[in-house]
Picture 1 (tube, rainbow, N blue to C red):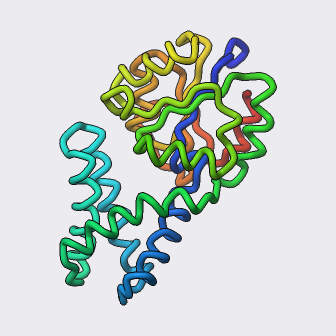
Picture 2 (cartoon, one colour; picture 1 turned 90 degrees about the horizontal axis):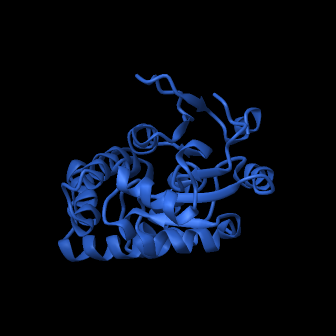
Picture 3 (cartoon, rainbow, N blue to C red; picture 1 turned 135 degrees about the vertical axis):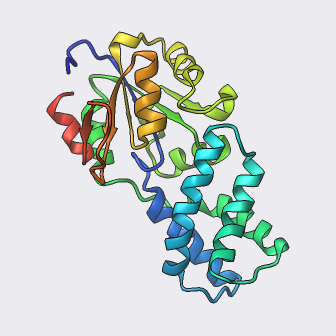
Length: 229
């Protein structure tokens, strides 16, 4: 992989720089306490995390609306645990979750160090499928907004990664060319396949060391990026 000509580094946000799993768990912990929900948090998260993953896949593929995503991932999780919750409370939890999520700002190990390392030599940008109103607050409160020239939320484009339009829009906004850009993200489908489809070199942030079909550059920690950038 030749990186001598790289000038623009595009990052995904959730699960790549911003520790979504830890911050999400803390948000649910606060909600369960406030609402006197007696479920064991770990039992709930063990069910919720894969359900949420599947609903986000449907959301990326434009098969489900934002409001349905927020409601159904909770409804299905409580149903799977045979825990009865009224719709009114589910909607309340869904709303509180979005509001509380950006208040917890744990970052992935090495995030600040790698951003400090890259910033003097590259223009850094974000391309995220997350909800715009939440992503902006996450960047502000985790104190990493200052590192990025351009932040593109797929909601503002009208389609989601891996749709080529998101990457093309981000390139235009950043004044970047395909040949001098790389995309770093944790989603094989959205970030790796999406970037590769438009000709951007992808780097798979593969913490769980998943086997992949395509031969792509991958790192299991953010600091490994120093080896070639």
